[in-house]
Image 1 (cartoon, rainbow, N blue to C red):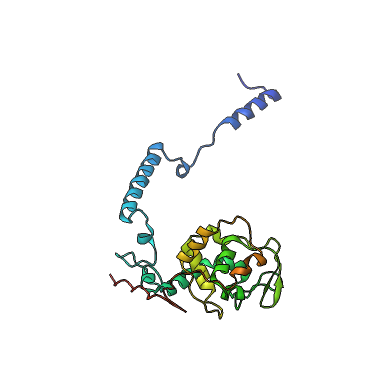
Image 2: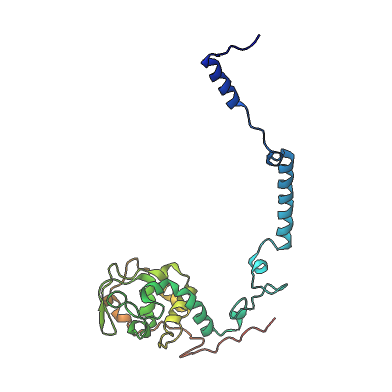
Length: 242
């Protein structure tokens, strides 16, 4: 029996809907990968990762460091690897203090000049070149209120925060040694024993004022100075090369 010349529009709608439900045939190169192939690739990746980890020592820095010397883990760059072992205590403190100074450089600037009217200079500062005890106390506990540095007045809102409180005694000593011997400054080392002595004696929880610190202006924390300006103790000999 032949189809009617004018089929009902409802039949056409049903026909179109059925066509739309049909999935398009995918080209051979567009066929999805079978599950067994995906599983196999995952297995290969896991095994390969385990082998690479063993061959590289577990991705340790000594092995994976792009500057390391093959088979030694050493770093041939100046000052890299164990090169610091050959430095005397003063030179080593200066090297490490330069890195730690980044905490201070945002305010006091990389050249130690500070920002006029906002942050006092460290270069040529009597606060830096004076007694080590006042300097340690300032950085350990912070400073607030007006101060005078090199004849100029400063009164930074909020004052100086106690940045040193978050550092180890050795790290703080390194930074202070660096500051006391940079930008034309020349002062004795600050050692970790000196910093620890102040920390043990002073448990202050608030910032200092300039008036509070006046008694310590020229006072140095006692202790041997192993190297550098004003050294009082012979520097320990550098370890023999291995």
